[in-house]
Length: 139
Image: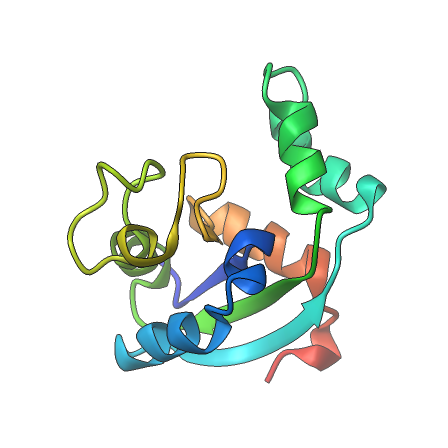
């Protein structure tokens, strides 16, 4: 059953390149409400825990290094069918394959530096949101 919340991170590449405002505008213009948001930086331990599902993959070390290379913006978004609608909004992981007008097509520079993270399931949205936010930080 689809829920009405998803989790996203604006990744270090998009933050460094000054795209926070434009990405947030695209998100809200697409009907999402931001119910929690923070500007923060992941420690190595945080990134390893958050991406533990990928720990056996060959790109894990590079992923952790990239995600700790600068600040991020973490957010919980709300909208009907939030996970699927947000995955559509952000586009394919590879920005060259992403549909025109998607966040990754507009702001990503590569598969590895692809501007944003979006939860891939309702279950992961809840897990990822609670990794970054306590209940009192969600409105």
